[in-house]
Length: 91
Image (tube, rainbow, N blue to C red; front, side, top):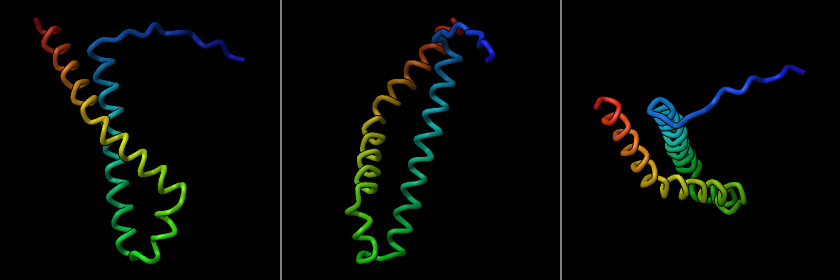
């Protein structure tokens, strides 16, 4: 088994921007997925989609979607923190 070398991690502007990019990519993917799901549901029609909408999978999807929507404020706070790091780095 290979021994992993540990790289010291630190929170700085680069790591903050990396975190923001990753989070942003996941949020964008979730939003696009939601649009595609809505389009597919619309194409299937209300009667055919009813069993899916009542499933545990759909309920979990909707709960996850609400959580992502609620996280918008936290993402804005993270963006503000990154902006402050940028300003402080240039001072």
